[in-house]
Amino acid sequence: MGNTLTRTRVLDGAVKLADEQGLPALSMRKLAAELGVEAMSLYNHVPSKAALLSGMLEWMLAALDIPADPELTWTERLRRGATSFLAIHRSHPSFIQLLTSQHIHTGSALAPTEAVLRIFRQAGFDGPDASRAYQALIGYVLGFILQQDVGTIGLTCCGQGQACAHASLLGSGDTEADFQFGLDLVLRGLEAKLAG
Amino acid sequence: MGNTLTRTRVLDGAVKLADEQGLPALSMRKLAAELGVEAMSLYNHVPSKAALLSGMLEWMLAALDIPADPELTWTERLRRGATSFLAIHRSHPSFIQLLTSQHIHTGSALAPTEAVLRIFRQAGFDGPDASRAYQALIGYVLGFILQQDVGTIGLTCCGQGQACAHASLLGSGDTEADFQFGLDLVLRGLEAKLAG
DNA sequence: ACCTGAACACCGTTCAAGT
DNA sequence: ACCTGAACACCGTTCAAGT
Image: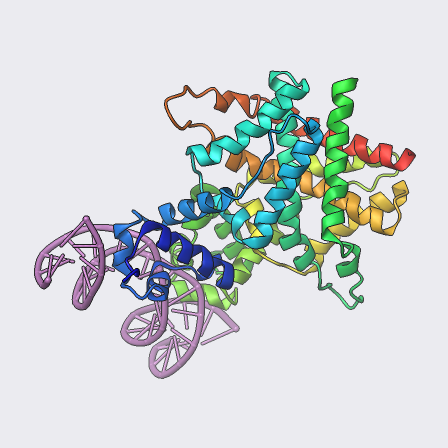
């Protein structure tokens, strides 16, 4: 039968479990049960839980698409890359938490960074400025996503007796438009930096 | 003797332990031992570990200073607020992780948000735009800090056999300057939005 | 080579008992 | 009112034993 336990089957199951029940609910024992196997069997395909989490992150990063197409302007390429990043977060809510807790140094994690830096260099940013441009862009993208989970959720309730006008204040409803607003801000700012 | 266990003493100890050994090392049992007490004694002053973590976050947020001084330009007030935020992260490495994992809805968490929104409204941003300006600014600040822990650390090593030029590529050494670079980008972008 | 089950050293938390 | 100790339901992981 095709039910042999394998590394990809373990990763698939782990991502599925995290997607459905959240990252805190993911334990080796629960994952094993979900796969109809004993907890210790997992260790034949993954050396530790940390390695499992890193594997899940790589699994998700595989969907990241940063176009290198020279027909597109550099801002357009970055805009699409950022949007692809946001899409991963939408499909896998644990994405950001994995990204910020798992330190991976494999090619699959470095490739995206190099791709973005390459775009900045081609656009005309020199060494240090390419690095800073990278930090500004990724900073915004990362932070915006983080806020959706923190800010918005955390602020749906109010202290004291005041009514809750805050939930609507932040996140105007159209998250996609909110995201593009700030993305535009950063990209235009970088364009201006390049011209001036 | 002044060794009576108290909520503030518990919070002080928890922050200290997290500062020194990292958030993952903070357990109710270890914290109790540090305070020379049994684990269950903590529950007389804090209802749960989640409440302890929220308490720690409020503890840290108390140091956040967002000036309201009308003598300062709105960009200067925001710049100082953002810098104060970064300073908290410097003193307490767990700050961001607590902020993104603990959903608090007390006044101490809402006050900073309202302060920033007030500054944007006074600057001339109307409802939805104030919200988006807020998201863009906080997004950058949050994301930049996150990167320091992720990006930089995660990328100090390289895949394959290529030498490690990446560590120096990102984070040009002067983190403060790197931070101000992107902060400037966002604030100038918002200024332009207001004028145009 | 892969799976299993018992075991170890941890967790947060409940509950009954002490003062 | 506050502290304690045993206990419960979990963790990740080691190790010896099975196939």
